[in-house]
Image 1 (cartoon, rainbow, N blue to C red):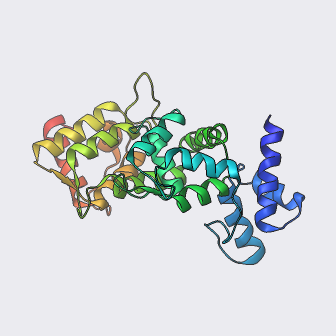
Image 2 (cartoon, rainbow, N blue to C red):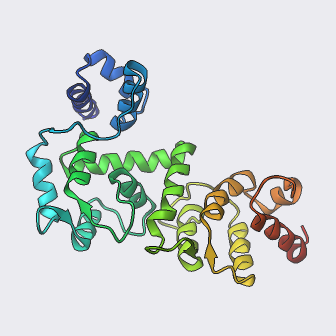
Image 3 (cartoon, rainbow, N blue to C red):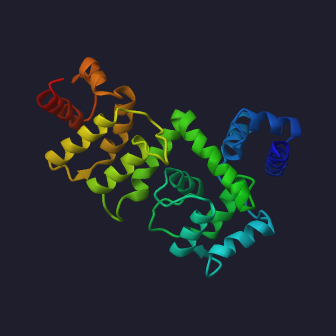
Length: 265
């Protein structure tokens, strides 16, 4: 089954690049069989260029077109009802962190947006997928990638801010931010965290924000929190190593001072 999956990836790569099977396998293997990463690597290394979209005038597989039409009421876009049905068929939930990976894969940049025909067809074509079963495999690969590739985790985490923020807003409301921080940093019976931190640390961070009436989160704060938790995954780590002279956003200095006062660290 795996060999068949790999061969389909190789054939798809060859159809896009017109390279040899040996070269296709080389780039796919060193990019963990992710076609989009392998293509970028190929074009950058072999041609000095970069590609992130399917070639123009490509003939998409009929099975992929039929799948799009299953979720699209007008044949042009997938509406909210169709998106929910598609997510369900993938075995995901809207509030699943892997659904954020799906959004990034498709270039679905706002939860309030619809998914266009070009987004759906071109991005799944680039992944070598025409059937739900193949798409499920890609999503499982991306789920694994979150846990093993720090750069990919950073990209997905940063992407989340713009995905979930209200239209025309510049800052994210605290309630929404907390819900999504829990996706990334809190473990439960159904989900493993992608970055393991002391649960007390996240709880103290939330209490600090609520106590200080920080009802809106800036993009800079959102992005730097991931780096902050990477460097200081526990209260002990903050107590031992945090330096207010380091170039963290000022809110982290305030959090440190709060922990000193309340927790006595």
